[in-house]
Image (cartoon, rainbow, N blue to C red; front, side):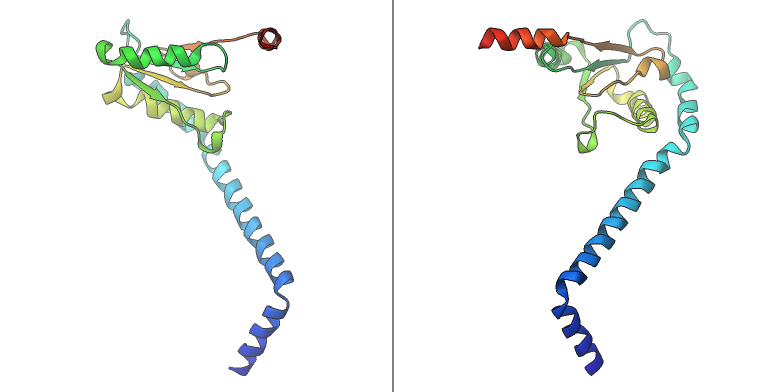
Length: 166
């Protein structure tokens, strides 16, 4: 037991180097586990995409079961989405907001495929309108019956608006 006491007193005296080593080890573990999690879904993206050929997603209905609206700042997207929320009950559609983890606007191909698969397989909520701030997500490439809308603005418009407010 005296050796344990000596070891603990040594660690206590050398606490900054020991704390630095522990912190480095912790950061290394977090980095390695994060890389492993990021690589895991990407190892089999073709198998996830192949599930989109099921009969559920290839309905020939004239009314789309999924409408995707990619929100772009300063284009009136908030007003448009608020109107959709106001009209959803009377038109019997569901409005759903996409919230990405860690505010990550660019999704990997595997995450895109998983999101599309989850939304198209959610039969209880269809028809639905999905909106969110996502860099570019081509639902039409994976599910042809999906309707997608994106508002694009010129960067000069923002500058002109800023000049008018000055």
